[in-house]
Length: 208
Image 1 (cartoon, one colour):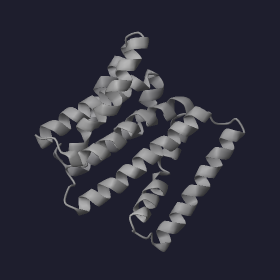
Image 2: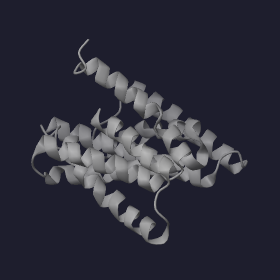
Image 3: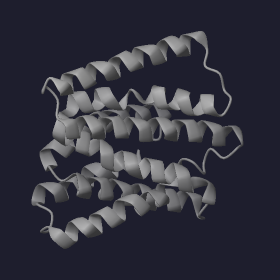
């Protein structure tokens, strides 16, 4: 099977995505992780598009928020709860599309109800002291960024702008991650060797 096979790309991306939270926990520096991921994705997106599209601005800002929020959730709440909270994203997607006049189906309504129940369970766990409040808020933020990105991407794709909200959005993620890194560098020391190693991991994830 060729390395250019879409199947291998999907499997490879899934494998790297599933270990992103682990990388955040091991590296312990979510600011650098978010920036390195953003920078690599931005370079690849710019090379693919060969132009900047204003249609990628909002999706890019949402992805930039996701790049920052998810590692924070993994670091403070743990990898499992962070992933659990991230995938409450359909709640935000459905709400955003409903606001644009797209009515959810009966199955989607049931699904959103289950997602709401999941959120309440996590809120309850946090209230009992079983989950970090910072991790909870970061996890819900990552869910919101992800869900709203999906909604925007879906709407733009219907208009024929699929590339603009995927590859074209990546350079704009730096508008979120780069200022955070500058603030971080101004008040903290340089990254540890373990953080630098995350560059290799981030490159592989972003490329796929």
